[in-house]
Length: 246
Image (cartoon, rainbow, N blue to C red):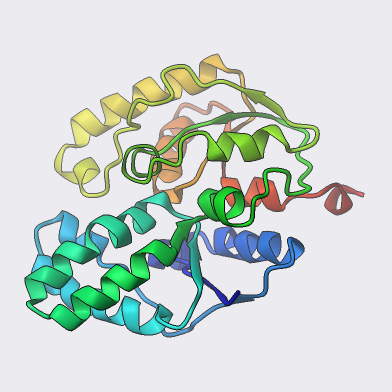
C-alpha cells in the first residue's frame, strides 16, 4: 500500500511536530510514508469565506499531487472534511467533468489519522506510553463532518500509563471555526471560555484533540488564564513511547 502524508498547510507552517509525529507513528506500525513536496493548501480557507472560484486551483493541485497513492493520511479532521465535503462542489463549480471524476476517485482514499489507524490498519493499540492525566476534545469537523465517533478515544484508551478523563460537554464547539473567530470574536471567546471551564473541571494536565487549530484557540485562552494545562495533538501522544523516557 502506497501511503502519502498530507501534512496540511497550517501544520506545516505552525505545528510541524504534528506531521512529524504522524510519520513517526505510522513508520513504527510498519507503514512506509511518502511526503509529496508539491502539496499545498486544500483550499478550505477560500471556500469557507466565500471565495469558491479561488479554491479551484487548490483542488486541481490536490488531486494531481495525490492521484497515485492508495491512501492519503492527514492529522486534521478539518482539512480531511474539506477534501471530502467541499472538493466535489468546487469541482462542479469549475465546470470540469474530468476534475469531478478525479475528485470522486480521490476522496474515498483520504483519511483522518484516527480513521486510518482504526479502519484501515485495524489497530487500536499503537504501543504508546504517556503517563499523564489527559482529556479529549472532539473537534467539530471530525465529530460532525467525518463522524469519526470514538476512534480517537479507542486509541487513547490503549495508551499505557495514561489517565484519560471524560471532558464535560465534550461535543460542544470550542468557538474557533476559522474565520468565525475573527468575524464573531466575542461569541468565539465566550464559547472558548465555556470549553476552558470544562477542561479545568477535569484537572487534566493535557488537552488533546485532532486539530491544532482548535487547540490553538483553546490553548490561547487557557494560557491567558495561566491554567497550567498544555495542549497536544493526538498524533503526538500516540507517537510517545516509554523508550523516549528511558
